Length: 97
Image 1: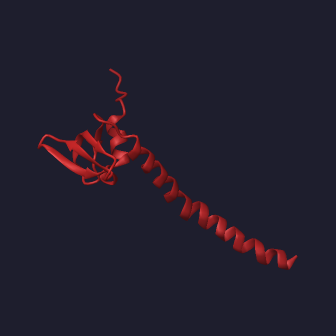
Image 2: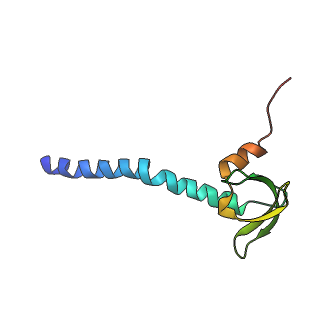
Image 3: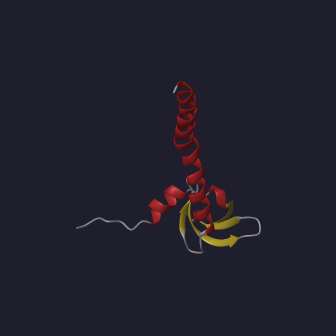
């Protein structure tokens, strides 16, 4: 019985470590890759640095995009686009009058 307990504790520690430390970043990374690949011309986005704009051109060759802002057109890496802020920006407002 004691030898069984010697194995249960490390397995439980590993399971806790996996589900609370390792798995959430992996899932977030998958979501960000899906978001990055689903971008299309005309999408309104926010970069991680806080720049608002609209996707003007997508380049799959070097994984970049050109963003049209009020100041002009700027080329960014797709990884610089904030998934969370862009989803909030594109969500329809639910204000009822």
